[in-house]
Picture 1: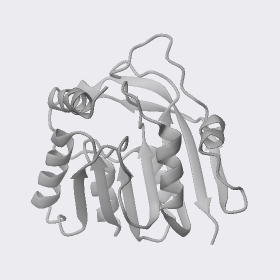
Picture 2: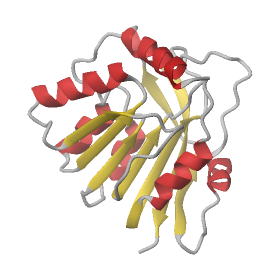
Picture 3: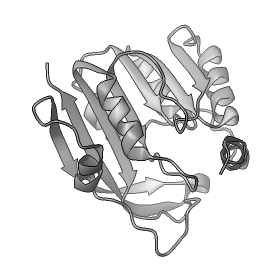
Picture 4: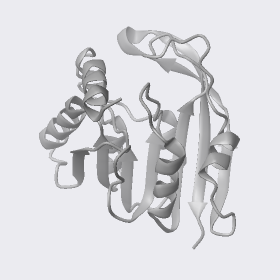
Length: 208
């Protein structure tokens, strides 16, 4: 599938949803970042921008990327309206072709699933190598299908955190797995719909 196809698909996904006036951060991000020192963070697949805006408010400097121009435009407008645009660099980016430049203290990848070809292991391995010493990579994947998900395939299988870690294949002497579990939570989707969902959480720290 071409980049154009993927961009068109994800632009359509976001355009079909109302623009959130105050996009909320992901629960697993908030609980993970609460005790970390602030620094430079890369948000892979920033979507509606809830994570990026929350991180900026906590004192982080954010680079946010997404394949969807609609998502990037919305985040840029939100940051400008809130007077936060000097600390949010949002850009359209296709991770199938290249990885954003820079070195980071935190890299997050929340629900980086797509119906298009994406070598996630390669992307996440590049993310791990883009960490500064002591930096962390947080990967949060779907562990179940929410009623409002774009993917309603009943045969969908979501890799466990351990399988994701094995696929990234990092040297344990240089990268340490700090968390690999599958917690459940009650989530609220579009239109206020509520459902219990499972998250697959993987947190990796680059050794100092």
